[in-house]
Image (cartoon, rainbow, N blue to C red; front, side, top):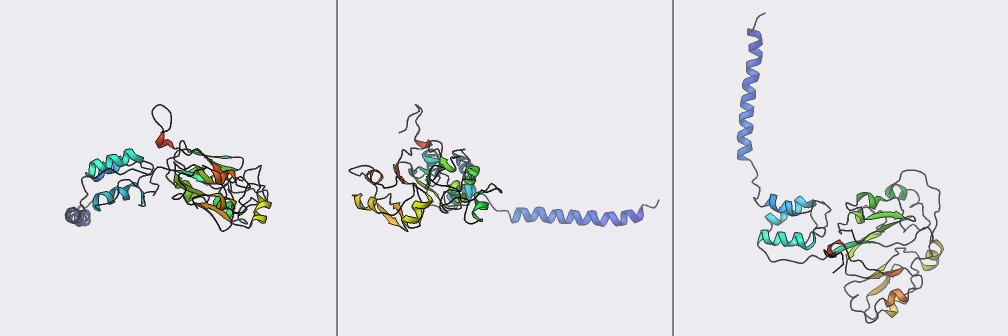
Length: 283
């Protein structure tokens, strides 16, 4: 067996490999992107939910902004709350900024006792999928579809489907907002956990139509508007909407809820996980 032909084929390949490897090593050193030494430490402070509540593309994006863009607020991580903001402030040498703790609420209370299905649906167990079929299986096309897309993305298991609609346990909710992004009917929103009054309806049809599909739906009667001393509630597109910047220190707390014709405005304690003290009480 002649070795020369084999060496003639192998040697050039080896030489080319060595040359290419050398070029790649040199290029990797010359073109390397230097990483801020603070990045790993700052990234480690963030909870890793990658929810985007901070306005950046996940925790990596927020950590990068904190390193590279002076003045980036340290209180944008809602799931991390004050503890994360305090750690970031200390690492960056800036003043501590309080985090406005938020929780998710469902603006629908049309459960099995208040509304009905318009079809016997059998198919993909997904709110996104069901919505493609005549707007959903429920008689109220604005209501909760109840297939649990929100529950599937919740990192805290704070959401369950009860009596056909999503229920959120504010005690374990961290306010990441993933559920709000997953809801095809946009029924879930984040509110400050110090709020106490919420509207549990999103139906934009006129009152007579809403009344036919859900006994708990907002009929746009505007009674809540008339009784609110702060002008904090308005009927927009046939459904009541609360301006929480104005809804403060009401002389007659919850007067809008007390006067709601259908009971779709509710008073509720939304104190979230971040307010839980070591003693098990809420601050």
